[in-house]
Image (cartoon, rainbow, N blue to C red):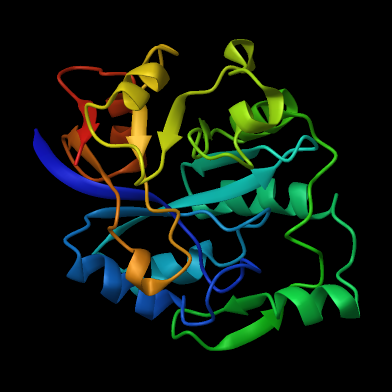
Length: 246
């Protein structure tokens, strides 16, 4: 077994709230500079930049295919998938539920850039990725599982866009695989203990929207190798694997 550092919630310039500098090569370079061995690309309601970041990383960094889905209640649900094709299929299903981005949307949020591995713009997403889907939280989790993924309750400590802030309680029957806390929850704190009481593994991620965010929070994984399959086993504490605060 080896211990690796992972940041399982990173955005690219496709996300309307992320900096345009969040390009595949810049993200990979920034992650490596911070000593990360694994990241997950989780853009809002889309996975169209995942393959480009994976191509930019090559064998230097494990890039998990992900997406951050916004439920109808405006809860954020992370989906982590075994490969880019699964994430893209799930992402296309989610994006199709969103309205077109009008002029006012683009003026407010800016362009949503689909990039290649070199960071060049190859397309612009025309759907309003910042808006909520019509899917309830449980439906979001079911969608992730249907495509072979892991469902994580995103930044459960935040006062907005978390399942707790939006629902008032943690939905224990939603079948989440893990909960995520932000950098603002100190390791070993009373707040962290409350979230661990949900009975699920707790991961800490940066929710990086800027290059300076990379590695600002992370999770230490004990795994045999840096792969999605091993991440899955680590969340289950299988065979000596596990997750811990970085």
